Length: 75
Image (tube, rainbow, N blue to C red):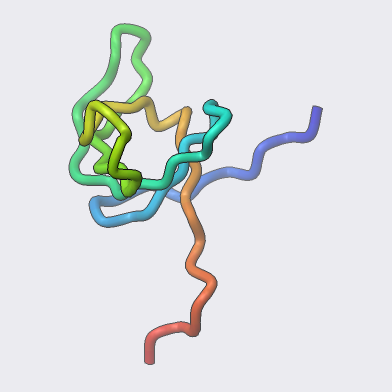
């Protein structure tokens, strides 16, 4: 199994994608919500897909991937 690349720390406004679902729903980090019962960090995510419910939802950061910008760098 290939090793996962280390993800940079997320911050509010970052665009993410679910890594554990068949449909890779995209969303934006709204705010952080502490840790779950196993100690994994969590965040509230506002999903871009209109029929994703609940929206926003709380997700473990382990289940998200940062979407890297593909456009030109800001000047």
